[in-house]
Image 1 (cartoon, rainbow, N blue to C red):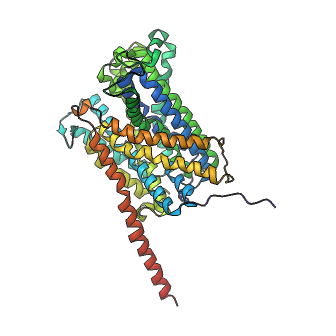
Image 2 (cartoon, helix red, strand yellow):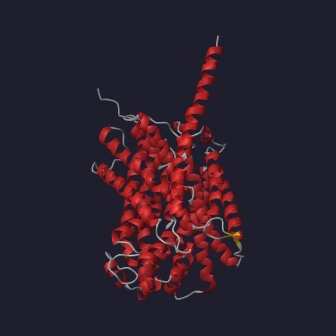
Image 3 (cartoon, rainbow, N blue to C red):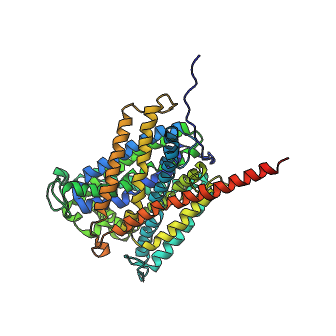
Length: 506
């Protein structure tokens, strides 16, 4: 008699399954759209030398999507994406450790994703204020001045995004699809438009992958050795380019998650690799090192307007408006996912028993409304930090490290549960690739983070963002009191109520 298949034991998220791979893919584009911010930073900081680093880290993100595709097919009822797959991988061998692996991973992932909403709404408010010539008078809460109009637009925008998030995955998918079409289609067109204008292209700008000053790829830069500076910018890159994994957050809400997960994540990874490679390459071969040395081009709108103007030999107000609209819509899409996606992670962590029961609640539309409301409120508070570089440093304390337990968990499942049911199975050697990525991400997270947050930032008057790096650590450690509240207060209260009922029974 054939032995029964080896099935993983886990708790599902219990959310309504009302979408498919298209919905997961479209909402997951919120991670891919972050190319609008990171590509200008990379090419204006490192020039052509930033391309190999960007492509390498993006390839690791594509591989991560493939690994998540296998895990999502093994655990189709889990919700919340990457962090939700770590717990079942650890709990059979180390049940005590597994609880904290689950809680820490989900909380770190939350710290990595929820700040995207305030960051993107701050950037969107800049473009709105610029187009409508709004006042820049405001306050300076910490380091960066923030205009009253920026505060108003950001806070109202975040509040409004809670509405489609609250109305369920089906409505959210329709809303996200509209945003994706309005932003990613023109973005993709711009990434390849230079093909039709070979006269504006200079492939020599890529030769040798040089820095903006003409020095070689292995030359020191920004006061650091080549290895240290690439490690520092890899820290920044991981917050952006591997975010295409966001599609995994919604696999548990797909009608056929075993099939839909592998389709959505394979597409997300492939498209992400395409767009994260072509956009910076296009900037370099069209604009060149001399023009990219202009610090004003670090702003995405300035970069895209200058780039498009050279390709189409035009400019003016119409082009400025079109680029501003594309960027605003892209930023709103990413902010929507920041409210929705990691809320699923908190919801799943609460179901698993490592987070307050408050986050388990779902509304009439079958989505974790309290978790999303929590994200909305936290996003509004973070708006007052005022700037992108602060949020980058604060947020990535959680994001990159959140994948390390997941990657180790993938290895554990392939090593110790080789016969477990896998509707989608990668080659056996991928378990070692997963371990390599775990080590790489740890080095980038720790050493790259320390170096990057020590770099002087012009927008901060030459100051660095090290304080925000440590603030991120403080928030990351706040998982512990929340865990203790759940286990020491709520669970004991529930156990006490159960014992009282049993005593009162006849």
